Length: 198
Image (tube, rainbow, N blue to C red; front, side):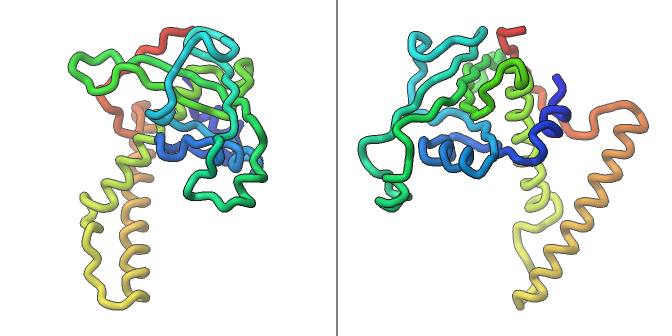
């Protein structure tokens, strides 16, 4: 899996997020900004293999239709500007861990071309999201940033910058050690997923 190469090909123009962002208007807006997205599918959307164009094992193109009612976060003008439908790609994979909460994960993406963006690369890219979550948790808890101790906004900014500087120095040392000893510099979870495709 070459997630690094996929990130390089996307050139920083991508969004990876959880299911709260997987909405019709969000997919259209992100595409309009000339970006791409990989989100976990919202729990209110059901998966039906008989709908959509199957392009591979656990991989299909689906047409989403404009909602009939304007969502709360949109103005009427924004809602009227939405197209009648958008085409998205759905990739799903299975997590095979006994007792694990989720067994099947469905991802929705605007990366439609299977020959350029393989399902395995998309799954790997979404997996990188956990590294971001863990890094944010480290910033807050391991470095003690859950409570800022300065009293003025300007000093709080300085405090945050010092924490970020220390964190980046620590991560750069981890990266150097990982490349020196040919080990992955990022922590890997013990969770294993087994995508049923080639």
